[in-house]
Length: 514
Image 1 (tube, rainbow, N blue to C red):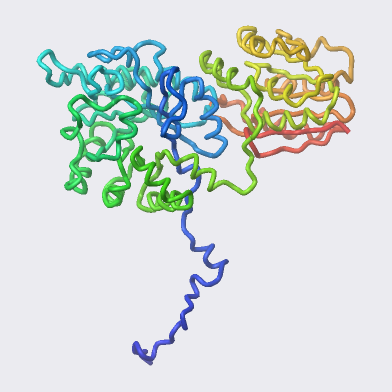
Image 2 (image 1 turned 60 degrees about the horizontal axis):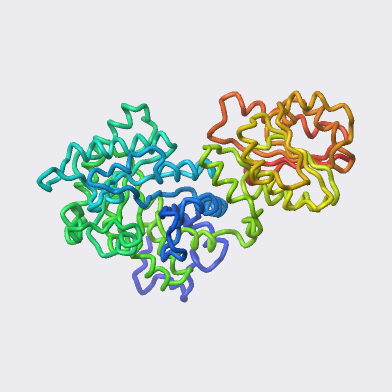
């Protein structure tokens, strides 16, 4: 056997065959950072807050729908909601008041983007008049029992409003157990608990100033992990939180604690969120967009399952494909419609990409006669009319008059629109004249899964037929997928129709009558 010594071994002449060829590099590149790895902090400010927040995602409640829709279109899959507290007092009464700012925000997010994962802060600091995370006893000490009850009540209220995960952030032993027990007792066993592992740092400053959560004591050092011991104490605290009922963890900040993130990942198998806090935002801006993305990719490589960052939108825009499918033009009434829909807890409006396509297709039918089945709150009608010319006309049919009333309030002054409050199934059976419409958008069961032939008979040669919601959704009943599958088989077989299914937006079918 020949043994090669170091001198006798072949030299690579400066070329590494594992890196030099692009195709080989692509095979071995490793997991890349994608927009779905990112979540964005959503800081909800008072209605009279001045414009021009120093932090991305700091908006008033009225701006939540547009902000969340924009993030969802970019592929950002989660938000963590922090609400600027109102009616602050020593018992944090506003934190559990019906219809408070946090509750309304949760509803607004879910009404706008139902598949966006919502995590909410469960803590007293935004709601107490002393900005501490806990409630005080009469002599100024920590009232643990009252604080636990407050956190449990907040968690249940958030879960009732639709949050997916609650995040107890007070760093109090026993608080995670109290929150988990309150959720379970209220029937919310499927709502996650994601407590903080918060290191003492100066990197929380911009958030505390903006949200008025800086405690009177000047710091929370007694409740946070000491940086010098963080590599050990974080592991101890993480294990305690898991024992108390946590099913995921958030480490913050991460810019100065990447070593802790690595150790935490080695020790724990639960999902870990790396929170790049408000004080990191200024530093990340100095890096530039490409540097931000490299930094966030490093956090993913170091063990983060999800990255909560004020750079989420900037990074997502950098990561997306060269061809952007985020609409640049939105109907002027849309934000107000979505805001009212959120207050009404209506979560079935067409998404922006679908709406933009509707507007574009509508522009191809000057003077056209348009039909919409399923007005909802009027989001689809707003998109359609934004593409229609002055001579075009839209008939929009909705069973629920209360829901349609929102559309009437925002679009009722448009003379091109005829609102019909009727059962779409019955309405279709009453239409006797063929070739009435040049375009149909169907966002309900009749005209799609029921009475398809009756609907198609109303459309002229050259007419367009558009349906959405073909891709699986979390809200679908168990028997709905077979209904979708049958429709997708039926439509292409209809004589004199040409159909194209699209795995895009919520899943579309665009068909034309030949």
